[in-house]
Structures are given as structure tokens and as C-alpha cells.
Image 1: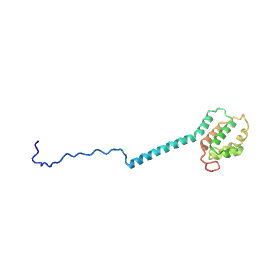
Image 2: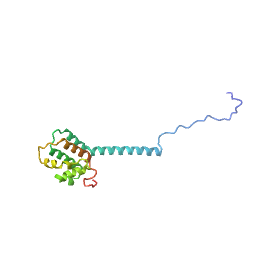
Image 3: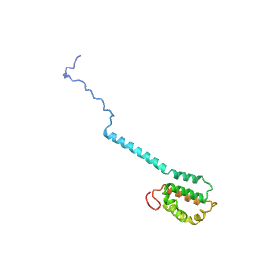
Image 4: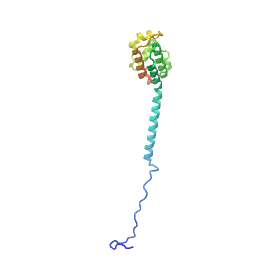
Length: 160
């Protein structure tokens, strides 16, 4: 081997680079970010399942209401009472009837479903088995089901 006479031979070797760093084990920051992402995903999934389950009976009541073509006011009232008993404390709802019941329905929906406007007709028709509900009654019940359920607070303003 002939060397270049102008460059002196210093006895140096080629530079050998170390292998690139491995991604495993991850750094502490990457581990924390991954853990936070995992916890966030679990919390979102749990909240979604709770939200779905909490509104299950509400959806069933609305579905039942939509499937009925000729519903009496007594059947409509029974549906509203059953839905209220599922979401509100039984001690508050079970004994309500007449004007108190209509006041509860109005107040628990934050006055979005105004049963007071129809109170005379409702109070007389509730005790007549053959009194068919009008379209406005069904719409009023649908509004109540959408806005009063599930109960975030009781109808007296107390947190449930």
C-alpha cells in the first residue's frame, strides 16, 4: 500500500458511531404522557357509559310515547308518573296527585313543560278512562320527558 506522501500517516482509524438510542424504555415524560392519555380515555369511556345508562329509561319512555297512536290521558299520566318515579325520590313523587302533581311536572321541567296552562282539562280528564290525549298533551309530555329527566336536582331545588 502506497501512502500519499504529502499527508503524513498519523495512525488514526475511521470514526465508528454508536448505535442510535432505543425507544425502549421510554423516558419518564413519555411514560407520564402515555399514562395521562390512558386515564383520559378510561374516564371518557366511563362518563359515556354513565350518560347512556342514565338516560336509558328516558329514551324508553319517549319511544313508548312515540309508538302510541291513541293514548288516553290516564295512560299518558301513568307513563309520566312511572318515569318520574325512576328518576326522582319515591318519597317526593309517589304521593303527588291532582294539582300538586301538575305543579311538580311544571317545576321539574324548569317551566319548559307548562302543565298549569292545561290544568283544568288534565284534572278532569285524569279520572276519565276514555278521555283521549290531544296532540298538545303528547307534545307536553314529550317536552317534560326531555327536559325533566334525568333529575339533576329535585323539584324542590335540592340536589339529588
